[in-house]
Each structure stands twice: as C-alpha cells, then as structure tokens.
Amino acid sequence: MTDRLPHEKGFHVSWDQIHRDARALAWRLQDVAPENGEWRAVVAITRGGMAPAMIVARELDIRTVDTISVKSYNHQTQAAAQVIKSPDSALVGDGEGVLIVDDLVDTGRTLEVVRKLMPKAHVATVYAKPMGRDMVDTFVTEVSQDTWIFFPWDMALQYVEPYRGA
Image (spheres, rainbow, N blue to C red):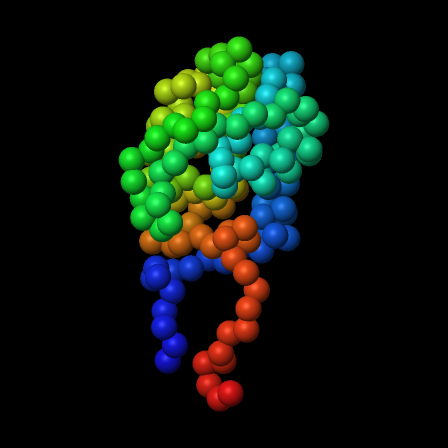
C-alpha cells in the first residue's frame, strides 16, 4: 500500500470544478444582491478567494474588485488569523453592498477577522466546513470538517504509481 495523504480525507478540486462551483455560487448570489440588484464591489480573500472572486465578478458583472489578505495557515497548519493587507476603506466602508468571496471556510477564524472589518458585507464561499459554516451567508458545497480540500493552484500533474502492479 502507498503512503496516505497527510489528512484522512482528501477532496481534489480541478480547475473545471472550481469554475463550475464558482459559477454556481454566482447563480445563488444574484438572488441575494442588495435592493437595487447591484453589488458595489467584490472583495476577494487572498489567496484562495481570488479565482472564485474573479469568476463571480465576471458572472455578476461587478467591475470593482479589491482584496483582503489574511494569513491563517503555515502550509497545512492553521494559526491565528492576521490581516496582512486591507481593502480600500473608502471603497468598502462597513461592507454595505459589498460581496466578500473566499474559496472555503474551515474553522471560521479568517472570516471572524474579516467580518469585524466589514460587518455589513455579504460573505460567500465556494466550500464550507461545519465549524465555520455559520460565518458564511452563501456557499455551494459543504464538506466534512476532517476533509482537506486540494485546490488546483496547490497541485501539479504528475505520474502516480498504481495500487497494484506496475
């Protein structure tokens, strides 16, 4: 038997899958847009939220996009969330009419920090784990807490030995 993944469960997401799931997120978000039907801006939580935010912004025709950089992992070990770069405060204000997008919510620690900065924003993630799910307003797919999601920007294609034979 070959070595196991570093986590009990692994969920591998391809570029095609993240694109489909981010479009599904946009489809859900069009029904929860502010009263005038227009989001003022998208704020991507970097780095993982950048690809989904780009797709959501395209699908919903949102031209103003900014980022917030929150570091909460050292490789695959979670640490205290720390804001490294904030979005333009004149643009986002308290978050009213702003859509925050990330790839996933795990424990919710990153979103706790982000919500303090923009308490009126709408938070959307593509994937959600049970511990952080309450921090998200809209998401597409829930996975178990012990699942590690392998995103395409973290992976490389390479040969893998078969389970049996050679």
